[in-house]
Structures are given as structure tokens and as C-alpha cells.
Length: 133
Image (tube, rainbow, N blue to C red; front, side, top):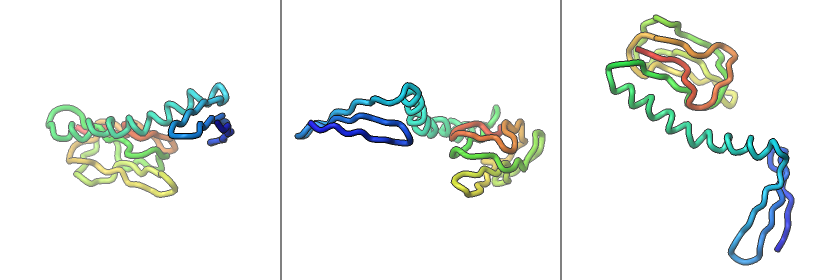
């Protein structure tokens, strides 16, 4: 067996590697590191599931249609307001992610029911940015 100490994003892990085909890992990270690492790993897996219902609701005529953030980022601009009529493809929100400006557009024709973010807000993938009727 060989013991290694690995540092990932400032968190220190002790790893034991057995010779042969099996690998065993043991985390000896700071107390705050283990709880913090688990939600970050779970969030991207949950984001596609959260985005799927928003697309599915666009098929139905009744109810509000949620416009979700496709990726984590910072809100740079809000181009629509509640009560405003929009057409499919109209820009609702400008989201900065990885130093690029991404236009979040209306997925269908409708009226803006609510804008759930403000300029300067940080959002995670799957966060509801706006709703349409």
C-alpha cells in the first residue's frame, strides 16, 4: 500500500492506494470541506432535471412557464418587466457566465408574469429567472 496526500481546491485528502486492482480512498479533509463538496457535486446533476420540467410546461397552454438559468452566473441585465408582452426569442435577461454574456430568451410567446432576479444577483443552474403566462 502507498499513502498519498492530495490537495484539491484547498482541501487536503489522505489517499491510500493498494497495489493490484482495487483502490481505496479515505478523506481526511477539514470539517467544512466534506459538506461543501457534496452539494456542489449534486447541484450539476440536479440542474438538468430541474430544466426538463420547464421545457415540458411550455407544451401546456395553462399555467406559468418558468424560465430557468441554463448555467451558474451573474445577472448583468434585466431586459423585460412584469406585465410586458414578449414573443418567442425576445431577450428577457442577460446572464454572465465564464466571462461571456448569454442572452436568456423567451421560450414562447406570452406575457411576463414575474422577474425573479435583479441585476447583480448570482444564480445557480436551474434557478428560476422569470415566469411567463
